[in-house]
Picture 1 (cartoon, rainbow, N blue to C red):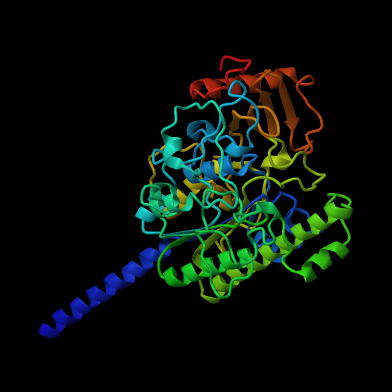
Picture 2: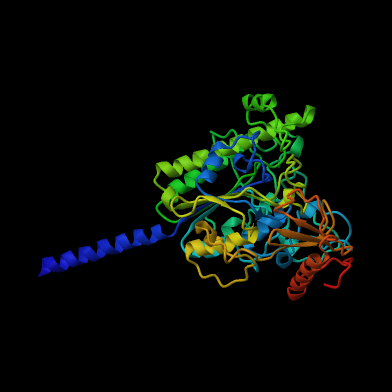
Length: 502
């Protein structure tokens, strides 16, 4: 009898252990790769023949490409919307604060810091058991978040930041008082290289410095040095692999937010630079057709993209070798459009509300779980938060402005097709403040200072060359009313000089 009882006990113990492992396996690991300033057409899977991205293209060919994937025109509102799942009017982050132009009559000047009132997706994921790491660009905190939070908003002048070589802010940012604004205060186990800065060029001279922050020794006070350090993109990938190695037996979430390919441009190697200098350009996209100094800049840019691709390949190879791919979803995207580079197939660049500024390369890869193909269903940056909740099986009750895109993984667009997408940019950078509605691939832009509108058919006119407001006044008015209704019902704030009441 005693032996039977012991056998039952051992079975129960073994069963409990097995159940625990099985439970962990049901939650997918998530690797979210966010590149900085990578344009829609800067990857092979979206038609580039000049820039070389074979590893990323392979992920795309074996996964789902989202052809109409949208961010904001600049990184700050994109990253805040990603983290909080909220539209810009809720957080008050409309652009990178230091880039704003004009007066407080023309702008609602942007906030910089995400406060504790706005939950980040990392918090419910960490509570659910995910081991979280943030690697690379953070940019969700201002130079002095405590002072910023005590300001009387809206403020009269835009926020400022220290010079690149000024490290006077570092001690405060490593203190307990500022911890709630950093990854470790948001459910992440570790923060590698995330600061208030939007680029790696922290050393004296900034963009004009020799390394630009991309070559070791790194000047980032939240990164530290390792004996093997040489190139920043390599180091950040090493950190991702090391974290997975430590937590691969538990559900993990890797926020791999590369600083590349943000300025300042630096060549990964002389060999790669020479390769892109000698490479024939693409007359269709205009990539690589530049001359003189501009050609040198594009060659440097090409080396950075190829290095990015090499590192994505390294990460995928590690996951494959450790039998982690089956339960790991990889999402690859960019925080806004290309920064001043060329793509003749889309209008505008970073900072502009046109397609070249907000439409970004995006793929989802999860072997056996995500159908292979391309989707023309528009998705927005706010959709990632609810998607992560859906993947983790979390019934999140907070306010979110997006929808889970998981139905698209198996070809179901019924819950996402025909829905309106909204942008509200209440401050000026490359152009005036505006609100935007996009629905059924028709985009209406309303300029807040004048009330004037532009409307484009994105399927048939991706370069947004033909303003349809005069040709289709009834449709334009219908969309204007829907945009105005959205602003009014959500009490969306307008700059003082706005031409409309709501």
